[in-house]
Image 1 (cartoon, rainbow, N blue to C red):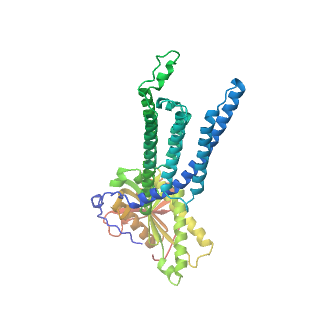
Image 2: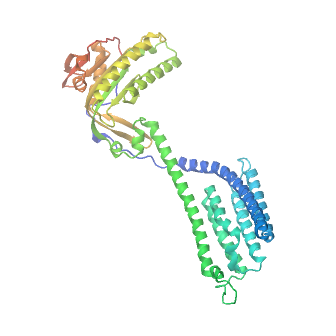
Image 3: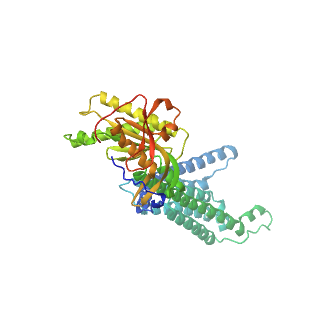
Length: 459
């Protein structure tokens, strides 16, 4: 394995993170969700219409029975309108339930059923006041008028603001037209003998206030729809953005970047523990091995690395050919980063040995591990088409050279003096060298496990 790094890499060479621009995909997802929701919502609204129809019928019949029993007064004059309202809501509800199927539904049906709901309420309101020869001022006294907020609330379940605004406009115009058609007066006169003063509660200014409150209630439902759609759009945008980031970035980094971690977007200097892992003699292992079997082998190897890394709370920055670059202390440094990295190395060696013991592989797997601690520049490089989280700097190169030196020293694990000093278990390591590694002038102290684990072969 040869990491694609240079010792003279500096933070200035890293490009700043460029956020992923909005894609048509987000709008398409919202539209698809709304399309699926529309059919389900109309079915629910249909069942609510049925419930409203049943409630109107039961309420009027029960009220008529109670009044007959208590004061011998009948509500016969109200029963016809109650029957119309009840049957109307039941029929409209049944029709919408039947049509609310993906293969039958058309968006225009939402407008049709909205007009039927509004029309039913307005017709019954007109009959309730007109048949009694009352002026338009008495319109608020018609019980069906108080179904208006209910119709608006139920309509808001569609999450279609255009249908909702159309319903508000039709209701407002309809109520105004009925009031004008029934001779709405500025003030109902109460000066005559025996005329109750409460009639003034139905004067024009007060009725205008009632209409305004109904319109405000409708406007509130419309704003609620807009707000809900914006939240959905924002949630979809966030999910798409996270999914896009997850395609390129490690799972431990992507959520931080999506949440707006400016340091990771720009890149930053920090201390980190770098671990390189590589398979020895992978070329020889691949020779003669079926390509599919080779793919299964590398998948199994990477799975074992991932499991071991997670156990020790590090993360795989990237897999490079037959090896991996693993980080500890990124993005958040910890006091035990070096100790966890060294423990990871020992555990991975044991895992590979146990794997070899199963004899399921045609060749014995040998690995080399190099560990170093130092300052690195970590962040995101690339553009919106291809971005990558990476670590740059001399410390990365040292870890890579240590991994390569395992072949020369015949060890599976080599760690720098800086890495061992960060561990509390110095006795488990022995110094085996003090030299400049390939391509470097400055010597470093090299440690291997005290209980030596040797390896052989060329990578």
